[in-house]
Length: 414
Image (cartoon, helix red, strand yellow):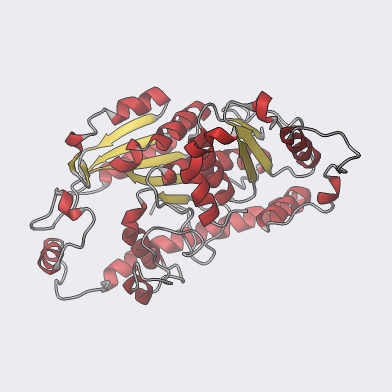
């Protein structure tokens, strides 16, 4: 209804990005992708949920399932990747959009829970997102007040929206979605209208809503409802409790209509891009090269040469600096930065300025002292497409970033 997406081309470059940060709830995402008509997710695939080799693993995996943007196993990584996705959109829009031709203007939407907002990495990246004014990042915070141990009263009683206000975010609360989603629609519209700040919408929910014996309890968190409670929940929702893996015709029709709107948005964009290609063939060709994962012709020949025993020995960071700047002029998709160690890591791109709120065309990121957040953001930047990020810190600090480093390898980025 709200997002721009096209199942006929899951990699359409101006699609809205969606990140399920609390990835353990991925049965919901797989169901939505199926209903939206993504061809890789048939009903039989849903029946293979959490089975080895299926299209529906126990956490979303971008390299397995079409329509999944990033791998979101550990909590906090998804919302942090989303900051990278929003950074990438802002940079690509500043670089390629022209008067009369808007090529990049997508939004990044996130669903996260209490757990994601307790993880330190989300604090690092949310702070930076506010500083950068990422106005096309919208987070839906599912505040069901339950963790595995029990009520959030046990360990998480802060005012989350006050914290995000201090980060420079636009904040709202939706008190009730059980009796209609009109308020949620309004909140999303308000978020989109605030173009200078990322937005978080706290949504009051009840875990296991509709379950006769588990609604609002931690027991609904990580285990199947069970036969009786599942039947009771279906009855509560007005469904036939005897049917499983069944979708009523009116539901399919509703989703099909929404998908048609998304496909039309893609078609309209393709007309814009065709016109853009005629007026700016150089820019269009550059985009096709980048999203095709091709390097500029002759790039590797521009790397500096070093002969052992002949050339002067240098610190590895000096060799790194030389390599970065040797290719940065021709490889405009190369972006990156350091966790407040630029003079030490020697990571600055000399041919470009900084990426900041008012200079999004810049290719160098000042991540601040946020090693974990830096790495997660770079994962999101790469996942967006069209950019090749790098990041740096001291080896002794890599332990701070290992959650994101592991996911970078798992996601087959490179």
